[in-house]
Image (cartoon, rainbow, N blue to C red):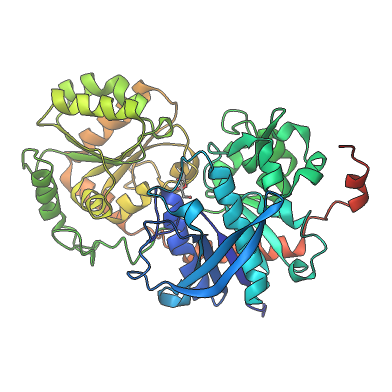
Length: 499
Ligand code: GLC
């Protein structure tokens, strides 16, 4: 079909290489590039956090300061921009009061900060005279945009041809605030339009509004898209997702094949590829040395890289850590930061098993790449996993994944069947310590069969987890959103509402 290229504005809180706490940033770093490669004009808008260096990234001002409606008054925004390779344009909303801070989130005024990002982003478009076909919102921070487009912007000719897509990267973080945020966002007048079930009385749930108002919703793997229709995974929104299931899609994330490539990665000790993975053993020695663990080629080395949160299954690991370490021969390297509780738990393991366990309580991208390259196996026992990027990166680096069969993990890792010579990793179903233990025992036992293990590792390395296929699916999704735009609610419906 010969369809015209689309104009897409993505709004997000994080993007590699500017600001990152998790996989959301990786997706924003890679998906726009891939869409651009398909010939579409994709631009991104994010806050200019204080730590984003203007000189280093060549940020220049494109719009003079202008007023943005906020809280029945205005706040001033300025827009900076830069152009990345492949022509992806990134706009930065500048406002010292909201963004000149050391971190990305966890401030008492987060609602104001992200409302401002989105409203400034929309007003910026008008000033740039660039009406988008699609506004693509990511996670709760940007979830009010679909609500705005069917309310305060509904009669605005500038947005008459714009549809919204809302991508859920993690349903567990919803952005729940007091009622006041509706006034800040200019939505108080329309509040009775949203169904009561979106949030308890006197609370406003950003995620719920994105799910309710977006023209099309998607999440980042097909399995997670069906899991969230159930109470177990729906985080209180399974009812709404079931109601809107004709508009809900699952598109698997890819990984950035330029960044994550063991044949060219500048951060690792030795380069290798599926054709000849043998130099990987040099990366393993280097990692063992860096971690202060005994340098032994025979001992299987397991890696974990994750936010230290309940989602990631550290509680399961804690349940079985002692019997595991006491009965099986392996080393474990963990990288991540997060809940204090898990910091303590992991530090304690390292203290008790200093020659077996090394924990890096930080986040460091080059070290992460050395861990993917240096480990034999990669563990992700997640309670839930919208997509998960680690298992895909691990496979590309020849580190065999051991995962719980949930969300994107179920979609990307196939159980190894030694008798058939098929599969790419080890999986387990129930969320319990024994199931995890069984998978680990199986993986460690198979590690001894060097030749079959080599074939297993190469199968993983040869999988295609690039963005190409998924980027094409996003284009389909955008066209669906344009074809089936949500009807604005008739003005009369609000005007009768008292208060
Ligand atoms: C979130 C999810 C993770 C997903 C990532 C990018 O961090 O927890 O599963 O891969 O977003 O979509």
